[in-house]
Length: 119
Image (cartoon, rainbow, N blue to C red):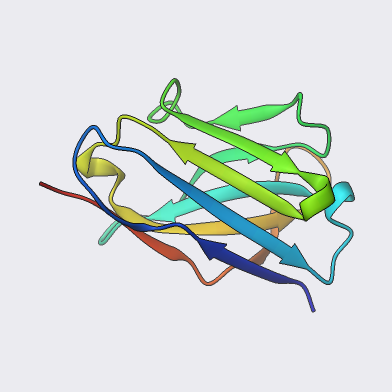
């Protein structure tokens, strides 16, 4: 079955940056749309960013536009989420997802990585 392994989460001060990585295995990565969801305590899971098989197509939630950047390196089966100007409200568990066609609909989920923004 498809495996998605996230890394890069942690504790960061407001205004700081983190880069999340997700390595996919047992899948045709280059044919997969990829995304990042997050879930904060007491809130519903939300799609933060997604990227098409061709990196020219991307999606961002309004709350992260201009601060987060999603990218992918197909040769490494890896998708990234660069997060800048982090705010306390970005605190959540971030999940990597894999989908089929665009727009991104998740078929597979990683186990998640915790991001905490706090002073």
